[in-house]
Image 1 (cartoon, rainbow, N blue to C red):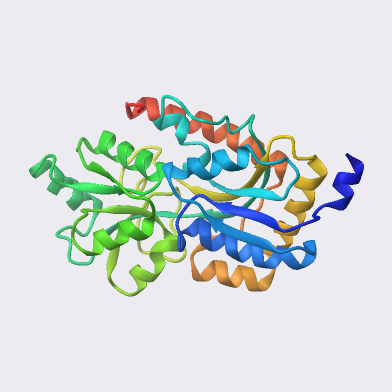
Image 2 (image 1 turned 90 degrees about the horizontal axis):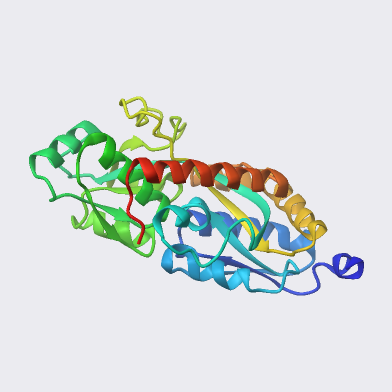
Length: 303
């Protein structure tokens, strides 16, 4: 074991992203991968494997050799939310993975197309109540589904979920008028908002974003305990030596703290947050309890 830890890394590291290219998770992963390759002395290759709300990639990495050379990018949608939405989850996030590091925080926003007939959540809700069952939303990640079902519950409306592989595909349909609204991370949505092609109706996270200081949070609009914060992380298969996970975290933390990565994060509205293996495991435990409670309150039927 000591020899194995001392030799790490001994070959190219694969970093699997469970979502599509251009997603917030993909952007953060590529920035970090480029930065840690030099200090680790090995290439870090990013591979996108979208599908099944991230579970295809998660399963593949859970089965990989626990030596630190195969990693997966985690998110609330891919790690915690499956326990809320599914009767059967093909992995146990706490037993089948070794937490390595949180690499970024994300702010979630609710988007509408620029010419949508509503400019606020209140107007969206009023429209939905006037014409029940006619409005829809993009379900491009599990976290977004939970957030929107919480909105349905509190507002007494019935926005319909339309499934997408990723936010990019959802954005295309939002712009094309085939979607009423689309929850998204501010990282992926910034470009469209700045270009005036979409408008942000509300921040779904607990605090206003410095990037959108004029956009209110759902809590400010009267939605109790409405706080859906995203985060992006890296995990390894269970059994990965703690020293390997710690080494990876230390290099990741240095990367996220570097001026160039922080500047790139700012451009895509990512928060430069890091968290080590122990702290990240504790976060997972808290988040699982939180989202399972929300799922029960919103009466989300598991499929």
